[in-house]
Image (cartoon, rainbow, N blue to C red; front, top):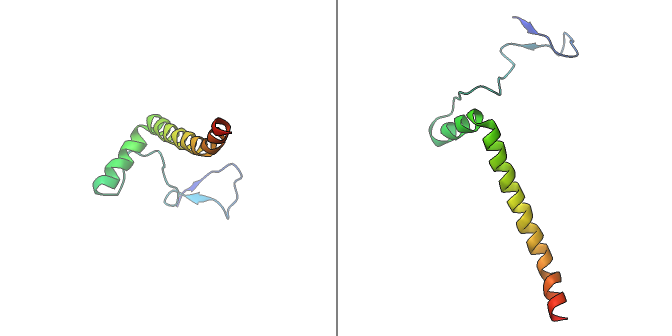
Length: 78
């Protein structure tokens, strides 16, 4: 069992090769659509991040629009 050195190497907290996950791997154990989607997200990390960020910006934009609507109508009809 080979120990993987960490920044604060401590024998109690040292990770073994089996316990450490490779989050940048391009393969998955999932089957079907979930496996396909996970492979796509892992392979195109930056594109996936950009799409997720655009989606979150869109949600924030919708929330700001909903919250501003009553004030705009009050200003128009008052």
